[in-house]
Image (cartoon, rainbow, N blue to C red):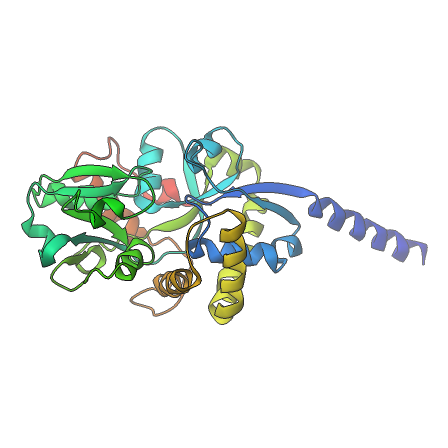
Length: 312
C-alpha cells in the first residue's frame, strides 16, 4: 500500500511539475481567425492537458514576432515558409515544429478590372511587416518592375486610389475589399496558388537552439495546437466565439462576419489539394520550390534545404 501511495504521489508531482512549464507563443500578426486553432487549444485546455502553461502574446507595431523570438521573449511563432527561409538565410536558424497551411493564400488585386500581369511598373501595396517574398519573386521572374508601396494593416491605400494594385490574403484583405463593394473577378485577381506558386505559408517555428533543448515541449505544443485546429474545424460557431473574445480583448477593429469568412478560408487552406486531407506537415517539394524560386531571384544567398528547416 505504501508503495502504491508513493507511486501516486510521484505521479502527481510529475503532473504538477509539467503544469508549471510555461512558454510564450506569438503569432506573426494581430488577433484574428488566422490563429483560431491556437486560441482553441488554450481556451479548451488542450495545452494544459499536455502540461503546458501557454501565454499567447500578439506582436505590436514596435515589437514584431520575430524580434521577440530573437530576444527569447517568445519561444514559438508562426511564419510563412518563404519568410522563415529568408530569416534562416540571414543567420537565425529556425525549425518548423508544426505546419498548418498546405496552400498559398496570396493574391494580387488590381484596379479597374485590369490583369495584374499587364500592369508593368504599377504601384503595388505590400505589407511592411513582410510576407511578400513569393510575390516579389514572381514580379522579378515576370519582369513586371513593380514599385512596392508598404502598408500597415488595411486596404485604404488601394481604396483611395493611391496605388494601382495590392497584395492581399484570400482570408483577410480580399474579404475587406469585398466588404467595401469593390468588384473582384478573374480578370483583376491573380491567385498565386493557381500559377505555379503554391508555396505553403503558415507554420510554427522555434529557434533551433531552443528546440534542441526543449524537444519534448515542442512536441507537446505541436500536438495540442493540432488538436486545437482539428477541434476548430468541427466546432466552427464556438471557435468563432473564442476568436471574437480575443479580437475584442486586443481591441482589433473587425466584425464577426469578416472573422467567420476568415475562419472558413483558413480551414480550407489547411486541406492539401492532392490528398484532400488536413496533413499538418511541411512538404519537402514545397521547400524545394521555394528555395529554387528565391535563389533564382537573388532572395537567398545560400540554398535552404528541407533538412535545415524541419524539426527532428
